[in-house]
Image (cartoon, rainbow, N blue to C red; front, side, top):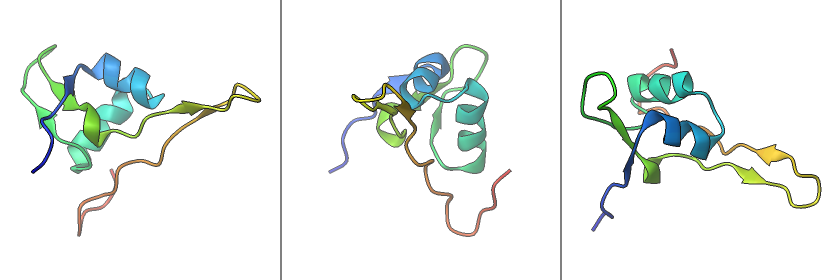
Length: 77
């Protein structure tokens, strides 16, 4: 049984991943993540599908997770 989606705004998704909002939108367009809803300010993304950023404790550097995989047979935008 899959866990319930935890839907977040583009801004929160961008903060969580350490990437700009345009990247979140591109991932959804490419089919890497699911977009929920439509219309300006009403689109949400499932946090469980997003790679979280981490911070190296020693150096303080931000480490980005790998992007979600492309669906079979799809090409990156």
